[in-house]
Length: 307
Ligand code: AMP
Ligand code: MG
View 1: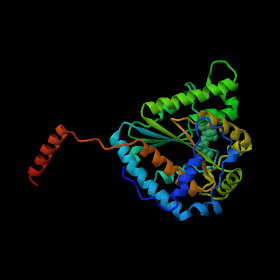
View 2 (view 1 turned 135 degrees about the horizontal axis):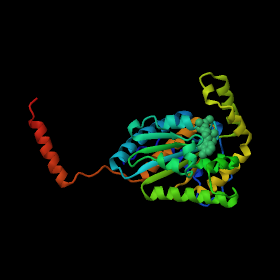
View 3 (view 1 turned 90 degrees about the vertical axis):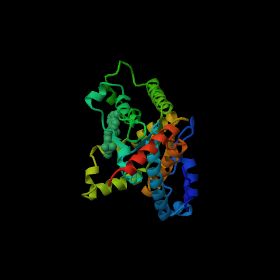
């Protein structure tokens, strides 16, 4: 794939990407991760305008990469987005995927499981929603909900029709193992998994909720249950820390993305996603000698056709 001239601000983003990536085995403490990377800190690294240019560059890089993904047709890309409410998952998807051909991309938003889904294991519905080779699939929430919301509210397990047993430490450890093996299976079989946790502060969530409540065009995004989940903030942080620690692997690493400033979030997600596709070292299929002869004949026939 052709390399693009680095834009101003790209160096700062590159440095930030290194900080975002959770190394396998690393113990995650979210308090050590900045939700901001904005204000003065951002100005030192790159400006809003530079972030916008970087996003635009990555959006077109992604569009080209997706074309190659489709032509190569051995790999799929699965982007997983997890976050607390109002962290910006929806708007990140909208902006990052804005240049991508809709034919080669699919988004699946996971809601509380249906009766049918509950009659299967928690990975079943995710397996069904995976992108086929040559496509980009985005999971807006994912199988991780089963070690996040379900861990914070273990009473939800009662509806999962599981064999008898307590949701003790071993139970959750087994779920992390299942997830790691599931993602390993995906990587081994041609689905590259890239995972983002959008890390928003409690205060910015409060501000975004207030905005939703006072803007009629945003009110539909607010659910009364959102405040109930907000009240469990510390429990969620704990569940996220354990999950990020246990499921960041060589084959499917997590990235902790500062989410208090949407431009920063979008630029980082776009840049990391584009890089992941580049790493796959894709190329357009070669035209072999037999096909070349067939093409030559086809060209001649077309040229001889009467207009
Ligand atoms: P939203 O993303 O705002 O549309 O909300 C979707 C809701 O579905 C969130 O409250 C999630 O926690 C919830 N949800 C998603 N997956 C599950 C699951 N496996 N079990 C229970 N709740 C879930
Ligand atoms: Mg919501």
